[in-house]
Length: 330
Length: 162
Image (cartoon, rainbow over all chains, first blue to last red; front, side, top):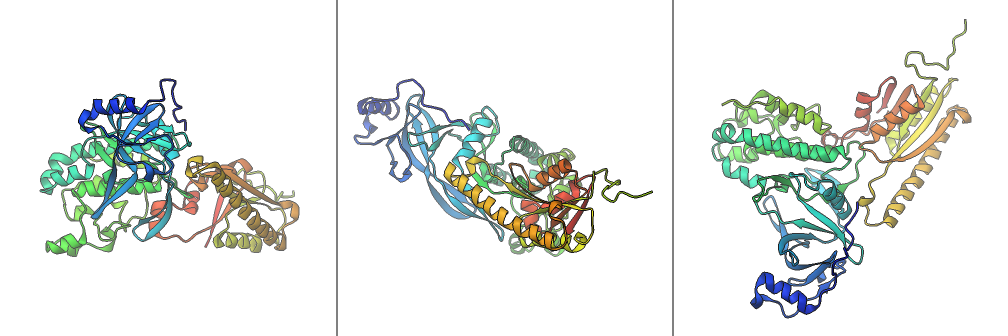
């Protein structure tokens, strides 16, 4: 990974100059009278709203930290991920400061250790520069050597929000929208294949880690700083994530036993343990049993993520080959 | 006509060279014990104990010191366990000069890929590996080394020890 070295343009700004730059962006009434100019971001709790962080000779005005929602839980503040303004060209950015966190990731009842790796994310940013299906940005070392990632702010909706909105009537969603979304899904799978081919993994594939970039119309993977120690298959966890997204997409949302019970669904009695998601045993993976118009070729893929599966996808190529066989005819 | 028992004609491999792919787990120990019990009393076998340490990318660690510390502790653990495995084989009757110990540090998508690569290079006619006995869920997410070897190893026999 190569992080950008400070360039030879002017790297020192006076307090007054920075105030002028802030005024040019916020208006002269909103210029803070006091703020810190930070070059070492090691203690990210010290970086306050309205502070200016200098990275690679560019001053960034810090705004709020971001939050991340996680399926029904309250949004978790991410103090090390900040909204910011590039004061040189007045662009909105997301700045990810270094937070070496070791996390116990839980998948169903499986627990494994993950780390947040700024270096991994920086390496992938370099790898995917100009790729339409990934968030874009650069990595720069601050004066203490921390790998800070400066990301283009993506304005747009999350993939799962888009699907939820459309899937009120499943049959209509299936015939009118799913073919288009399956094509997008295939494109996103290929993008992950692009990483895998170069020996990298995304590490945290979730349906809320795909954003529709309103400006360009592209779908983009975000947040690839998770890393974990692999032994038998480096790509298995990514494939698991892709499977979950597909099951969610085809079902127009997760179809759970609880939901079917609440609806008094006649499909409940047809379901067996084998039809359920291999990790989340309350989610239906064999969706054809709920919606019989799901074509066999598509349901065959979903069954790879069910309790009844006796073979799993080991690589992206296998998944893409099966996706190519799926045709939805109205 | 005498038969050269050191040749494995069927596989095209140069001799009766068994690779035991191990780590420091109990299932690996069982694999070593199996080879000792089963082949220790016969002549003409060569055994390589192979321990692959999959080294994460440097970016996995907060800094270089952590990376070094991680690697040296893995190497130390591997050396210790390999010495124990070597003794199991010697005690079972393998001559000293027929037991090789190899610890490799590699970067790869899976340990199985490394084992198969080594088997091809060393021209071993058999791979012996212990099965971890992982759950279906675990296999789904993290994969299974023994299953991958069963499916992908070519021109050799694979013994999976439960």
